[in-house]
Length: 182
Image 1 (cartoon, rainbow, N blue to C red):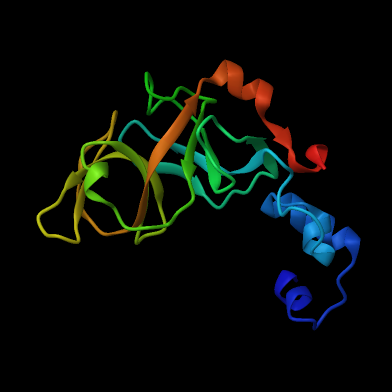
Image 2 (cartoon, rainbow, N blue to C red; image 1 turned 120 degrees about the vertical axis):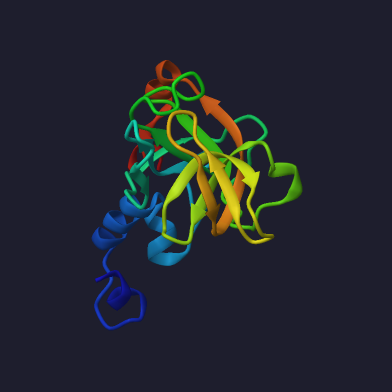
């Protein structure tokens, strides 16, 4: 439906813009007629959830857009996004309900990321929070988990440094619905 609206093959109403804005974490006015900022000033979207089973297999990844937004973290920019942590696979780093912020830059890993806990997207469409290590070849990476097995020689689409982690108690107070910020 969105594609038909976007290419002009179907009528596009403000009601539809509200639905799409909710799904994409952007202001409906911006979608409908390009007025104002794309996102509510000072807020960035929660783009999905991150978590894993005890064996390290992924339960959630990006793509479950929630329509939720959160304030830009200190030192962050309008390109920041957040993941909501689900489960206990990152206990001690980011507990269940925490927010992990990163800049949505979608660039390959860089040398300063090696040894750091980063957000990555694999070629299998999984978005993971892992420690980035060198793999056996220049375009392969090892991904170390806090609770699961080491993932060896993984091809990545992109990697991004974590810019902030907000504990669950604070996260539950700052997450709001996108339409409530307009």
